[in-house]
Length: 192
Length: 192
DNA sequence: CCCATTTCTTAATCACGATTAACTTTTTTC
DNA sequence: GAAAAAAGTTAATCGTGATTAAGAAATGGG
Image 1 (cartoon, helix red, strand yellow):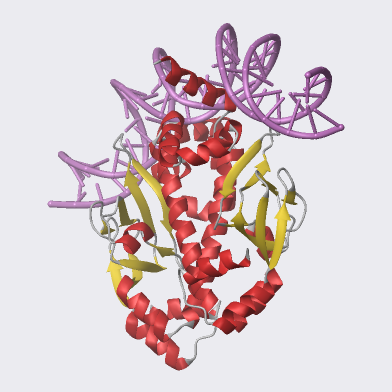
Image 2: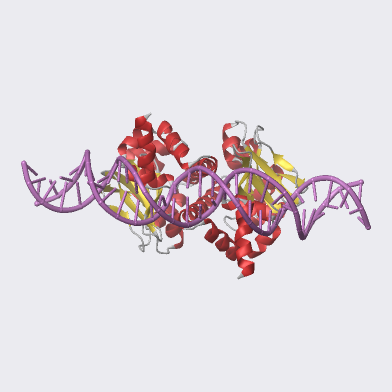
């Protein structure tokens, strides 16, 4: 499983054997069963998690008591609450497994040490964050340029297989509307 | 003006004299008058820009022909369309000066060369992107947890001085609603 | 295989904020 | 300092998607 991360890193930078070994020493492996949490609100987020298998979700509870999914963590994605991880303040987020998953964990402290031992990894994480930022901008564009219905249809056209993997109410939450509305949209589709 | 960038970098990492000199050699300076553009839609974004003085805005035109501001670039912020910059594809964005501004530009090619000469900068940009990502998440939370009116009042309470610096229609666009609606909100406030 | 829980559907009513349009005020330009 | 352009206001109407509620279907655990 640790190989997945090494492989991923090697897509962006070149690690020599020694560096790869250092990375492997520093990281932990966690198996998470479906519906189990690795972070809950009011806890302090301890690590950054690389999803090597399965699927996670990051969400918070809004003031109406509804879950607001802000991110899915699929294979080869990092997932965490950076805000809590960086500041050491309690998180408002929950991170939960949608499927039985395998994670690689990298605690804040270990990450700092590892970055000193393998400075090359700064480049890896710089590239990852840059990609994440670009994706955020893209998502923002859609949010501003499309109606909820269009955004749903667009998402389905982009990720048809992923849509099958998760309950619809999670997709509705991620896209920013209610399950009832999603059901309404889908109802239309069948009738036409 | 180049000093502003060096100072900013030194807040996060330590550059020695030689490295600072290399950075200064690599970057360009641009003065931009109010309302002038450094990027327009359909152009390819050539550089990343550090705002050392003034204020910029990043926006695109949505399908209804309205400007959608996605980001302001204040002093000590980087601003660019990373998507176009990375892929070399035409941008959909405009980057325009809201005030007379001073920018430091770093072209893609030069940035790549500079990162090889001063690997330490990978860390700087990693940290910057991580901060940007955290800010995006925060913004997303507000988007999902507050009504437009609440988001406006919250923004004003966080950045009262900035709100004075920009036209209201730009703030409305940034916050994702119409100038008319903003006007309505403000009307309420005065009456109470 | 059955009961409990989770997920999805349908429909009626409601509210936030968009749209349209006309007008006022402020800022810029010459 | 006058004319033009840009920015802000107000009000009436409209539409998207929320809310509420009740029931149907699917899934899962023992």
